[in-house]
Length: 240
Image 1 (cartoon, helix red, strand yellow):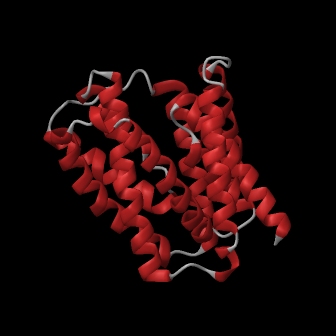
Image 2: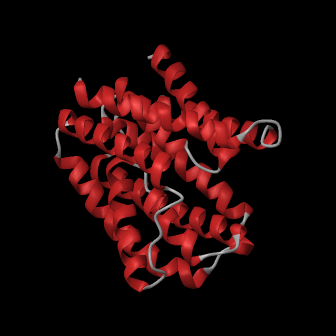
């Protein structure tokens, strides 16, 4: 168990460091590696615990910039999608979820590498519905809700601070919902009860370290390395 705690703490430290440095990456990095050690369902509860802390801190730090009007509709549909995603997660076998995770990681890496700056979606209510729902499903299944909401808010919110604050606030509320639903539905497995505090502490430390080194490292280079790593782990899960 001590070895597992150390490995998980290192994973969350690295993921949170990239999150603090680049503004994204915690969940994608962590869910890319953790299933090599623990079942997907156990990984999700650890990541939800850490995500609640991280997004809560980021949301509170930027609360004055939140666009409440553009938060409400995507949030409602994200909560609905989260419920659907978690329900599917509880019903699926770990082997199937691992294969599906591999496919999602490969697709995410391809999206970030080739299409992130090219794809634009209309700024309307239908986009808000769809982005929120898909984000919620991906967040419920794998705790990677980012890409759909990034697509929508990058068009709907032009001011960078408003975009960042609204995005993190949405993730915070959905993280609370998913964490509460998970605990009520499944409880916290005894095998990871002792892991969560260390993972949470290391995620906070990693995020603060990322903030400190923000001006000294190149975020774009870090992002590209993350995309490559995500694609590699995705392929590993697909061929296992």
